[in-house]
Length: 297
Image (tube, rainbow, N blue to C red; front, side):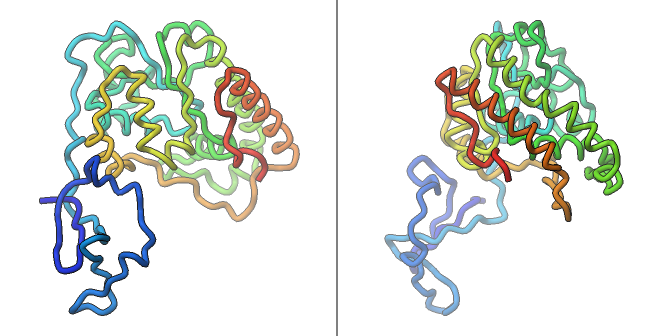
């Protein structure tokens, strides 16, 4: 019945993560290392320090989703460069708010995976925000506000290259990385990674910047910021539920480790220059610059 089992010495408490028991503040494991009476190799915790196990029961408190009950008067973009985790962010937003997200495009495979807002016209007003990779002034000014998702360009470029050339297996073949496709792709897409962010910062009416890496690291806080921008009350029980459902069933399997670094010294030099441009633009608006791990590698 419950997704958590908390062992407290001889007692076992079952339940959900709550605001009073959010699983965010772990204690030193040694404090919980009280041996179980019948199982010498297992820790059973104590009345003061619990050992918490996730059961096989799914936390369903954030699984209900619907269209907005009244048409929204404002259009909010979920904007990102391709490969920056937009679909994953949509999944998190839908679970956290209980409302479907829409898209500037239509992807039948995403619709079939449960993104029911995918079929709506992006201006329908029935969805909580709209996925877009667009970066022209006219397209940006069509939105009243935006969540701008930024990801390390080295990771985003590889993710998008895999999507573009990977077909049904999701990974580009060795021949694509070693052939002319990859250098050409980097030449075309790396500048766009920078101009995408610069354009949204310049033309966006109300822009909340979220770094993909921060969202992964501190989902509870970052998703709370996103939900507030969307004008929805932040329900902590839903956010706690999202943490246990965060990957979803659509998430790409991540970057396959290549046996070689696909980025040449020249590529790294040009990408570093683009990173510096984006970092300066963010800091120029009193925002946090790019995470340290964006720089080489």
